[in-house]
Picture 1: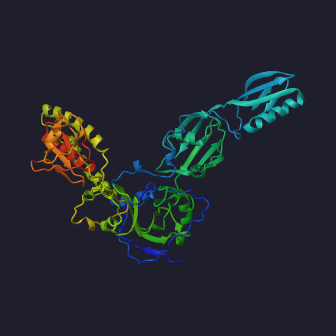
Picture 2 (picture 1 turned 60 degrees about the vertical axis):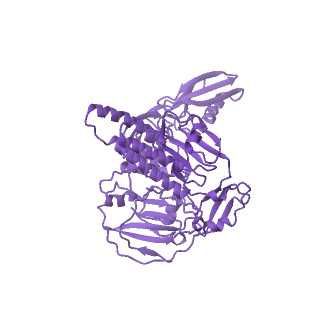
Picture 3 (picture 1 turned 90 degrees about the horizontal axis):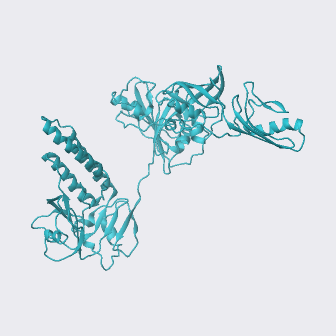
Length: 565
């Protein structure tokens, strides 16, 4: 078996947290592509002394920045259980395995030759007492056996002609001590048939930084009655019912060993286990591989250093996973082809598969434009550009917030003005962050054919039109018939002119190919253009007004929408 060992210096990213159920059955993991071994590099980066409350995924970050707070970012597998969903509702239903306890209410009906109807409590000795029948011991009897048991005793007196019906009505209220490594140890009330998860949830759940999700005990008078592994519940839905009594204790042990897994897996968490080591196959069994995963890297502490190992998945099944290891599953596959969509005035196929690295010229030869296609105004929309536009928009909004909220006022009057500005900016930022950029790439006719295409690109062929759209801060947003040599102001006047909130110095023309420009005397309006009038920022602060206007312009160009204030 080829093995890749890389001693790497420590410039590494923080990984998402992860945790493992140690006794999960090993699945057959499909073979992926083989990966050759690679070279070794001496490790040099030291790490801080290990804190047992720090998860594997947090250890590297702590070495880089010891002041980082981790409690809020914990992603222990199992911590998602305790968010109040179990604590608020006491169980009112009984499953067949529920065992009766003193204080439980039982509804009994008898009819025929002898009639009786009543609700009885299980007495402190664990009995029900039926007239003419006598005491019936029911403590510890499962709910599913209650009816046959009572019927059996009735038949000893009434052999025939008497029908019997018995059912649990209400479980005995109990108080259970929840202690150990939980968020809020204490004495919690509930019903005897409430689940152990409900009592843990009432105590704030297992402490995600120190507590164990696989070592939970139910004790009675110092005796262990049941061992709980919450990973069995999370992974396979198995949670053995238990009938609680007053004074029972739920004890959560300390966390034992953990590893982290992230990347091409569905369960990217810190996982806990209670053996000296696991295998990669066991780790992947609970992390659930995503389709296309091919390789796994393991970063492991050795003294004050980290060592990295890299394997193909089919070679890694029996590799050990130890306490504190950080696993990253990757999909080492490379694009061979890309798919580009064609929209708009096009009569051919709407999806074209091209070789990786194909250019726009490779698509143009396959396009079948219809009679109204304006191929000169070809539009290209790219997801990666849209993502980058969104990032730049958020940066601009962050700067605007910083300029608004972090500037001190020298007078009370200035403070009052800044308070009004702050409210304006707050509302504007919330609305602006919802804007979704289109990711348009402006193409130039003379060089467009050499543009390299990417996976997910959308080419849109606009239709020739005789309409100019006018919208934004105008009286009536509308489409206007195109008339040669008319100015932008002329088109605005045809839809009722500017609104009261308009910024007459921020009028934008967006041409069919996506190119945008501020209107000036030399601006020429073409068929299919859009004229947008932006709103005016109502702020006494020149800096804030300029910041809002800049963002409004940015959004208008990115989304083709004039955002309202």
